[in-house]
Image (tube, rainbow, N blue to C red; front, side):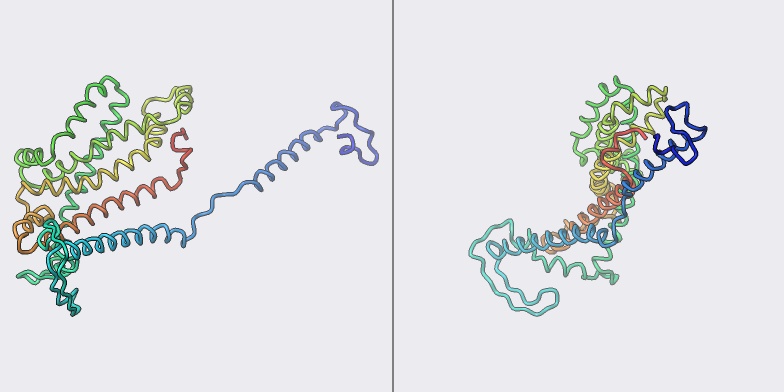
Length: 346
């Protein structure tokens, strides 16, 4: 310090009392600025993912999905080639071919009624009815109808499930009393519950949505309870030290900590709501959705099995689409969260 403060015409500094006024604050400010500059140089702000990386994040799963579908189709046709009915194929997807083959083995589960050829299923999408509408157009309309019921049931079930989770987390004796009943409710087959709901509420949107919500609320309830209790105990102690109310703890700590758990349950509930909506349409007599389409296709299964498989394929795609919508919502909601921050109070 002596060498720093010695200037021409000044006496050497021997102690703090000898430092001229203003010099010590100036030194402290200078050191603080130096430390700040070092911190700023060491800090590396998170860089946004480049567009190419974002595209790869979506392209790879899509390519993987298509590859799996192709593998399933190859196994499907390979099994029929080995143990199916005799082949006498004149065209595939409109392309003239000539394939005559007698499989060396015969296995009834893979005959042409149980497992029609893949290309026959694809060709059935373009078959037209008396009104000139293709099967694909009819299935898309039915899928949209079912989606509306499934979406309403999903939001209803998710709301009920999250509300139950909040109540059970805060009231322990209710958890001990109600949780066994909630578990028991899921052991009852949905096909047995659906007619009761439809008869009690009459066929319509509400009955379909309630059947769909029946399959949705339970995973949300369990995941919500688990997630809201997963927060860092130190964060709880911090909020309690500030005399935070339960409502503040819920919004500031419990719900943020439960976000990853809830989105996992939402993915399960989204696909389950599609199943619930289809099952809810079966006893209601509604023929505009996938449930009615599947019933009609089952009636003609012995002569047109490919139409039933086409309806099954669209139902599966609807479930996958609902799942992906939740994935998009999860990525947008948790885009600024880090795994180590999810259980910490803000």
